[in-house]
Image (cartoon, rainbow, N blue to C red):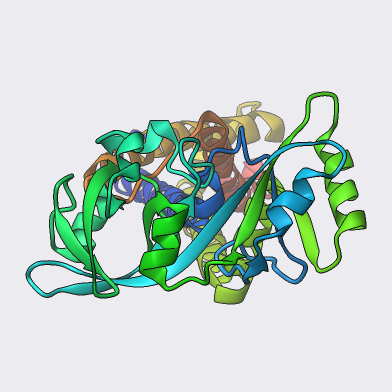
Length: 370
């Protein structure tokens, strides 16, 4: 490491590039999957523990219309404490400068607003303000997309009807669309949604009953609908979009190739370094060093390379995380992810050293005297 600085630097750079790419892509995938299930994860899951949708839906972002009478019918089922109607409609928003965009209008009953936004996602304004005439919410991170301010007090048009932004959320977002939260009646009004239809029913479970029991009761009682644990619906939505959009395949393949390329680049660099110093290793063996000792020596070098490369890569990832946060790309690196990334680093570095170990172990001590 000390006497062959060019190869040592090359190995560390190879580790840094591989680990940074892996961390960056997995972080972006995690962010995108969070958006995919955003409709459910931004809702009040403490109240809407179960979501009832039509029986063919496996994507919460594509909800079919249901009869509103289901809200009362499901409320009468054993184990159900309360039910809440939810409407999800599409609309075209127009700003004062004439710019337009497609948004999703998410309506639920006041004062609970079970479909969202959750109180912790409110940046400006009060949730109760959504009861005001023409009031809707808007998302802070959508300002760059709209190229317009979405601060409370901003006047807009939704499907040609006047509205005013009264609440600004932060990180209450969906995949491929902007969420505008409002009341049930205003979501129908602005979205042209039928008065006797809803998109889903959120269900609160009565104490003493399990979610599994209530889900089974709903499925066995009402034909044409399916009850989901809200978490299961979110996870199913993520799987559906990830598979159908090939996002998982493209990012996954990039991660795999980063691991493979890092493994072989580092391995071949260490192998080249070993070839350059075959006589040195042969001398060690000639004065009594065993293959096990030499193997430990090389593995220790690889471990030190892994530590240095991992630390540099993590510093770059943290810098990248802070740099893109202002643009709304929120990346999270939980401890379990950092641990997994470190194990991958060890695999790339120490696994790649096997090329050099195999070559050096085959060196005969007597070769240094020839």
